[in-house]
Length: 82
Image: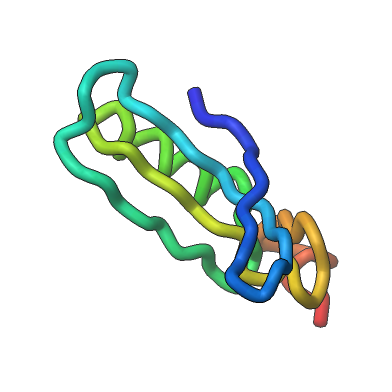
């Protein structure tokens, strides 16, 4: 449902984001903040779920200044990553 896009901060830094639209006129807009594991499958699923409920939703990749495209799972080596 959603798609990855690029945003530009006021200082010129470009960061990724995941955005999902409801397909109709949105009820409102929401920002979903990532966990320590980045904009992973769970965050994208939550974003898509709110879009299914009629919201325009964006999940910015807050770690992109340090490491781009952080997308970690909740177990094993992903959980141990610094």
